[in-house]
Length: 256
Image 1 (cartoon, rainbow, N blue to C red):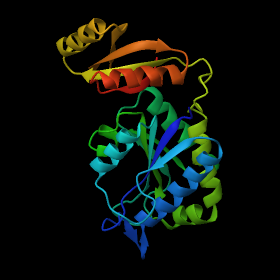
Image 2: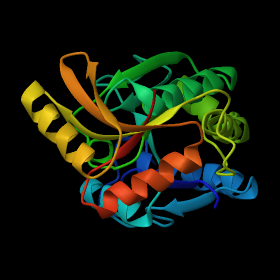
Image 3: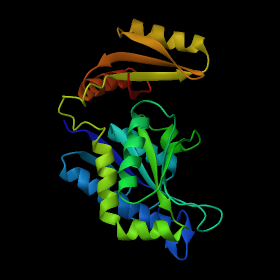
């Protein structure tokens, strides 16, 4: 079974996103999302889209679309904007937490976009974005340059094909095609919870053990993550994730 990637073109319909000199973020997002999705499809990935035309869904609904699709990864396309035009330049990629597969994926995309002509502004955590907070799979949000910076718009337009290919390469550098072979020596676990209180993590751990899973608590900064399994292939991790979801767990796949 091919790896499934959810592609989200940010904004849409009544929500234009950032606007600069008549240029609308929602249009650039859709154009780039479709181009990257097309490249991934040609490479054998199973691609699902939150939108393929100029329509509006809330960010929460976009996360639901991805979750219902059973996607293994989620990539959201946006363009940045600053309070004053021509102030900042470059790409950055946003994640809910800067750890695991999502962090690796974000950095891979940024590095490839830097080769395509953008400044690399790094990876940033964002806890308040529904498409990162509510998705049940590793998720990233790409800010493909500043819409209100002329130099970034020139890069976006003149290097568009290179940018689309760079993002696709950044994704495939990390994401398995689902043939069961995994990616290098990477090990995967299925995370079922991230808690501030150790007691809550212990409760989740006990639940997993009672359901027959090997699991452990892993400290992650100020949080306690509960993770099950230790899989050498992404396919095996995805199968375990499906089983856990069927038991009612909220899950995501992380690297050990």
